[in-house]
Length: 288
Ligand SMILES: NC(=O)c1ccc[n+]([C@@H]2O[C@H](COP(=O)([O-])OP(=O)(O)OC[C@H]3O[C@@H](n4cnc5c(N)ncnc54)[C@H](OP(=O)(O)O)[C@@H]3O)[C@@H](O)[C@H]2O)c1
Image 1: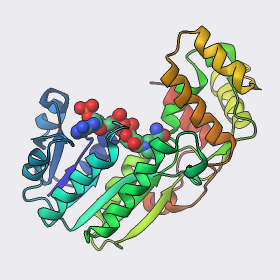
Image 2 (image 1 turned 90 degrees about the horizontal axis):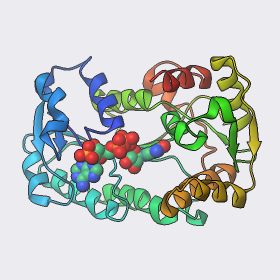
Image 3 (image 1 turned 90 degrees about the vertical axis):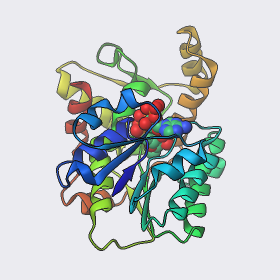
């Protein structure tokens, strides 16, 4: 039995959709806080296990009869480490024989303004390694699907206005990262205790993004390398909350300073094909 946590989120849905192409629904269980959100899985015959990362008893109950767990990291940033520890402890107690954790493909996070958000991913990795559960860690690159959040709602009219400098990031689609996670779960003889860095097959600059957006829209989309202060002021002017400004600005700074410029062929080898190109990925993102 495979248990997927975070199953009602974007990556979880992508992983389960791929699992369903390979295994019977009766071999899949999902951890969900809200049964209604998991209704489409239930209709397909997937076992819904109601639970939540803060509730250790619910996690222990959810782990019953489970061999493999895909732990999709929490988005509850203040509590992330303790929540992940709760899942690992429950998995350990249940004798789970393969734990797959979704981490972050960021380097030198210690010097990031977002280090308090990023560090718990690495502390989780350490906790998993100490747990004795055979594990695979998948450090995911920045999702191409999140680009509209950085580029703004009207990017085809306004162009890209970001303090991203000459940042290069090998963005990848959540759908393909979910498929990779599913493939790892399904490996018959997993090469355990490995860490993979899952990235697109090329690093992309924001100039490349502008070119790709121009190609798919037929409009000219330019990239303006904004000054950080003016960028933040523009967001304030649009009534974006301060917390969101600091997170958005922190990610863009991390990209500009090269923290996401990590390139591997791990995603390609786990998928058994090249991940989609930037142009193909953006076409998919902007057709939703
Ligand atoms: N953004 C990036 O580029 C990036 C890159 C690398 C890694 N990541 C990590 O990947 C993770 C998954 O991404 P995503 O897009 O799938 O996120 P998402 O759509 O926000 O999904 C988060 C999932 O976690 C569940 N969850 C949150 N708190 C929980 C709790 N206390 N107990 C049980 N379940 C809880 C949510 O349940 P509900 O549906 O009930 O809310 C949802 O199913 C993120 O959380 C992030 O840490 C992100």
